Amino acid sequence: MHILIRQEKNEDANEVYHLIQQAFEDSDYSDHDEHNLVNRLRNSTKFIPELSLVAEYDGQIAGHILFTEVHVGDQTLIALAPVSVRPEMQSKGIGKLLITEGHKIAAQLGYKGSIVLGHDTYYPKFGYKKASQYGIEAPFEVSDDHFMAAELIDGGLTDVRGVVEYAKEFFEKE
Ligand SMILES: CC(C)(COP(=O)(O)OP(=O)(O)OC[C@H]1O[C@@H](n2cnc3c(N)ncnc32)[C@H](O)[C@@H]1OP(=O)(O)O)[C@@H](O)C(=O)NCCC(=O)NCCS
Image (cartoon, rainbow, N blue to C red; front, side, top):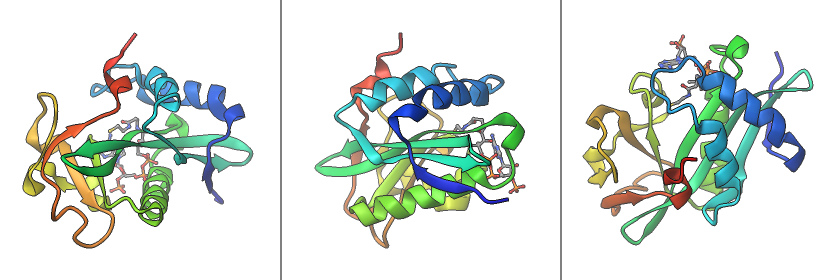
């Protein structure tokens, strides 16, 4: 199975919108607005085009991931949100490819760390640990286990402390 990970293009937006909606449809840990969130984030000052990626399989988009800039104290990091794989294509390693390729590009761009709110059984595979271990806090009520941070380079989070400031678009649900 050959999966191509590439930057999202303008003309992918519609297919990506429906893919995200489908991916989160049955999820209990979702506000079912992730597809609209991604549309808002594309117009955000915190949007990073190089970190809006799709997984292409057989000419179709099978997965999508977006990382946007966040601030913690005087440091700029990224936040992974959301990642989605087409339901019939899940558990084939596509999520893993999107996350690892995203981290690689982010490190090349100079980002030192990434934040995620998500499954505590999934993200630790990619280097995420409880954010509280680094002194990084969420700006909302969240269980300590699900709010995580990963270093993208060795020691990348050593000097990072404080509350994560997300793009305002995260809080503008329609
Ligand atoms: C979560 C998601 C992006 C993972 O992508 P994927 O391509 O299915 O995952 P991968 O093939 O890379 O990894 C599969 C592994 O992840 C596990 N996994 C998949 N979804 C999981 C979940 N929701 N919680 C915990 N583990 C999960 C699988 O059990 C599998 O484990 P194994 O490698 O030990 O067998 C995808 O399942 C998805 O789109 N889910 C719905 C949307 C969602 O929940 N997004 C994440 C929000 S935090």
